[in-house]
Image (cartoon, rainbow, N blue to C red; front, side, top):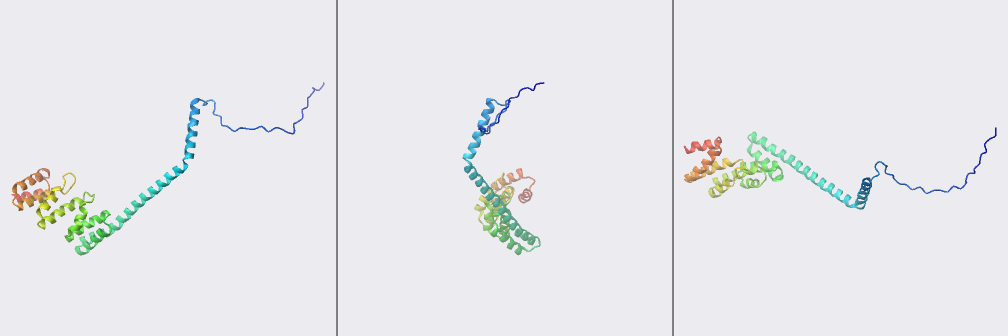
Length: 229
C-alpha cells in the first residue's frame, strides 16, 4: 500500500504581528438603535461627571460643612438645656422644701446664664414672679412658647394693675388671644375685676358674659359669679 503523498510546509520564522483592536460588542439580541442611544447617553453622563468633578466635590464638601454645623448647633443647644435644667431643678426642689430665697437664687442663675434654653426662660418667669421683678417677666413675653409667653403677659398685667397702672393693665389683658393664649379666661377675669373696681358695670358685664358663655366650667367663672351676686 502506497503512502499518500504529503506536502510539507515550513514554518515562517518571522510572523507578522497583527494589530488587535479592543472593542465591546453589543449582543445581537440588544444591538438596536435604542441600545446604541442608551450607550451614548451613559457615555455623555460619565463624561459630564468627569468634566465637572471639581464642582461636585466642592458641593459635597459644602454639604458636609453645613451638616456638621447644623448638628453641632443641635448638640450645643441640647448641652445648654441640660445645664439649664440642672440649675432649674435645684430651684424647684428648694421651692418644694419651702426655701424661697434659695429657689430664687437658682432660678435667677438659670435665667441669667441660660436664657436661650427652655429651662432658662422658665427660670426667668419664676424668678420674676417670686421676686416681683417685672423685668424678668417681660423678657419672657416675647418668646415663642405657648406656656410661658401667655403666663408672662398675664403676670405683667397683674403687676400693672397692682401698681395702679389700670389702663396699661387693660391693654395687656386685652392682648391675650382666644386662639393662642391658654390664659385668655384669666385675662377676662382680671378685666372684669378691674371694671368692677372702677364702677364700669356695663364693661364688667360684657367681659363676664364672654367668660361665662365660653368658659362656664372655669374656676374664674365660678369665682366671678359669686362676686357679682
